[in-house]
Amino acid sequence: MRAALWLLALFGIAAAVALFAGNNQGTVTVFWPPYRIDLSLNLVLLLLLAAFLFLHAALRALSALFDLPRQALRWRTQQKERGMHAQMLDALSHLLAGRFIRARKSAEAALAQEASLATGGAPLANGAQLRTLAHLVAAESAQALQDRPARDEHLQRALEQTAARDGQETHEGALMRAARWALEDREPQQAIGWLKGLPSGAGRRTLALRMKLRAARLARHTADALETARLLAKHRAFSPVAAESLVRGLATDLLNGAHDPAQLHKAWLALEPAEREMPELAIHAAQRLVRLGGDAALAREWLLPVWERQHQLGDSLKVKLVCALEQGLDSIDGAWLARIEAAQRTNPRDATLQYLAGMACMKRQLWGKAQQLLRQAALALQDRSLHRNACRALAQLAEERGDGEAATAAWKQAAQD
Image (cartoon, rainbow, N blue to C red; front, side):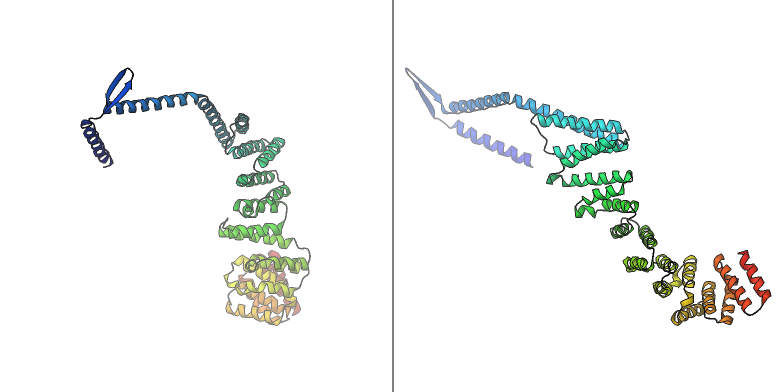
């Protein structure tokens, strides 16, 4: 459609020129004494047009002639830039392929090419960024070759190149690489120092948080590692199962770092409510509190949320819960005794609950009921330690009532476990 319109326009212009030129009777007289020259107006117009075109072409030719040195300089600069970018691509390719010596040489060659461009009066618009990347590639290669002086030198130059505001992203990348190298050398304090140099926004990125978590764990800063793991879990850096396992492990380490009941209580309060409701953590905290000589009532208070959900626990966790409660049966109160008896009546076939109820009755000197519950539990308990403890308790009860034969049989069965 557009071509047809252009064709119609050309026909219209040709028709208008033909009508103007065909009916134009004007002449132009040129007086050049003693001569007189009469020319057609159409011829004069054609000559003027030809002169204009000739003059324009001559000016263009002169401009191209005088521009040749600048074109030659631009061509040489482009060739150097292409060579520099080719060297940079080769450095990256060699680095990915594990050819670190060649990668380092290519990066240094790119830096030399860029320096020659800068001294030649043709600096690149993104020269600082390219120099930074080249220094980082050379530093990465030096790190792989265990050449720490060269790595530190290239890293320092890369950080100097990114001091400007427009190189903020590259500067952050250089700091993260430095932190990763420190972690590879198992220098967590140095890695933490590099990460502290990041802006607040960059410090919350997943990559930075992962390195911070690793550095905190290597430095045994359990509280910082736990806080970082929580942030990573919120950012969904791990699967829900992996995040829960990681947080649980770090929280366990935090509890293990306490050496007296006061420190343990402080560490327990430092945990989030969802973490305090984790069965593994609550059981471990209660057992450690009793082991450190803490208040057994406080340990039972920590175990209460887990006890209320004990029907959802697996067999191994339920055994650990019963063992944790058994450690504080000497000071058990009536409320907890009622909870244990109610749970046992609700699940009369649960041997673990029968064992716990029997041991609680034994501590309260309810010999008959304790013997009945422990005897039933001993027949169905699968855990060897609980079965052994139940047999010992039955032996002690038999000795209390003077039944030596039953006591001997119970002690013998306990010894077999």
